[in-house]
Length: 417
Ligand code: TYM
Image 1 (cartoon, rainbow, N blue to C red):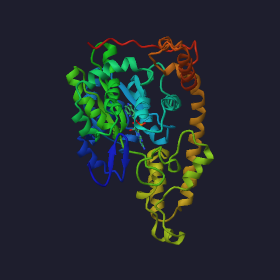
Image 2 (image 1 turned 120 degrees about the vertical axis):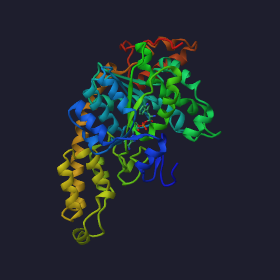
Image 3 (image 1 turned 180 degrees about the horizontal axis):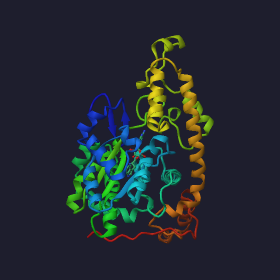
Image 4 (image 1 turned 180 degrees about the vertical axis):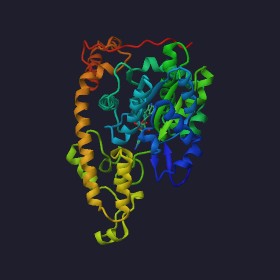
């Protein structure tokens, strides 16, 4: 791994050189050939591809070949629920929504509450499950089609996933896990197994259909190590290798590194009070000069400015307007204060709209969630200690917001062997 920056599924630090990452990870760049093909098939090129926000892939041409031959693909993405959703997470999810609409594709959305419990010392199982629910509200608020979207948490869909996960786990050696993820003898054994849980949904559509189904996984590049392993194992189990499309990271408001939940002051959460979000933006790092005079004379530096990045990634869709903002900044015609205020307004109105939809999503959760447990908690009745059963029921109700009597789809999966 390169010394100036680090990208793993659990840690991203330093200024990421994405071209180097393509080499190190062995992925393919999204080039002009793919963009031309995309336009031919779909009629247009979305902003995220035009701007190279989605910049890399694995087997994208293969999935487009299959699509053109009439074989529909399934989308798979997810979230590790260790806290509230931030707007960086929304980037791959918004693109996934675009893909669902454009290719009429079902979506499997995994909440890896097990992973986050295993990874974060301070996170309890209850909290991880609570965040699965909270994060699911954000996913639903983005407007996915309830008839084609299946959201599940590993702790709730474990029976279905485990049967696939053990098949995967049997084909991964500890030495591969160490080489890919940097594990050592102090790593807890849950985390070592975990990658097979993240692999499982890539094969679930094939298991359910009883035949091979192509799967495309949109995500930021940090998750690629998991899917390298998944792809290695796929042919050994007789499945297609999942294809993937990778995005870069929305930076933090400090301008460097990715936006990360561990630094709340430089992170915009979807649940942030609008006033708090404004304050964070007004405190953002910019490419401004030390004084107004100097800025007028020398201009700003949008290339290092967090505020400009936010326009680029999410808050200025119009390419001509973005260019004009860049020009004005570099020529000293616009000051950082004005740029920040404008961005704060845009973020505030985005948050207001999102929060309204998020609020309503609570009533729709059961249209999206798939679980192995019936709402009557049949499966939880097994422990003999009645107090324990009562406690479990309370926890589930409290944190998963499923009331007794609610109907939840229970998907049954064919055994693999
Ligand atoms: P998690 O919760 O770290 O991140 C969720 C998704 O958001 C992407 N991401 C970002 N994208 C843009 N800018 C950022 N600053 C940023 N930070 C995170 C992540 O790459 C991810 O796509 N183990 C996974 C959960 C998971 C998953 C999956 C993700 C399970 N199955 C399949 C992608 C695809 C996790 O902890 O993601």
